[in-house]
Image (cartoon, rainbow, N blue to C red; front, top):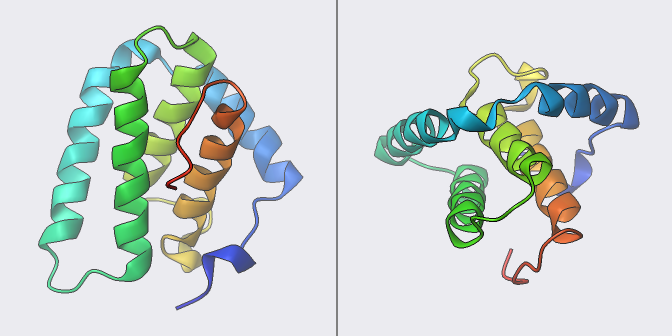
Length: 124
């Protein structure tokens, strides 16, 4: 298994992802969270779950809690969170050979980015 700290999202990727973030419909939040819950449950139900999968699930749960605890978030912040969730849900990754490395890198990037906008606890 590769170290997630060795994989970095390029600036070109960030530009591409920001365009996708702008296309997110915040009114799809409920449906997206429901599908995310199913994906998390399927991952947990696997015979063996690796450290990256466990970390990613923890980050997704944290992103959901941010949405729940901060109902007044700016729509762009909500879109960023929903993008991270949708990236994890999507079966056809932009970078399929990396497994969950790109998913966790996107989640970390979003968490770092939104931490500038809202007060996040340092546990993740």
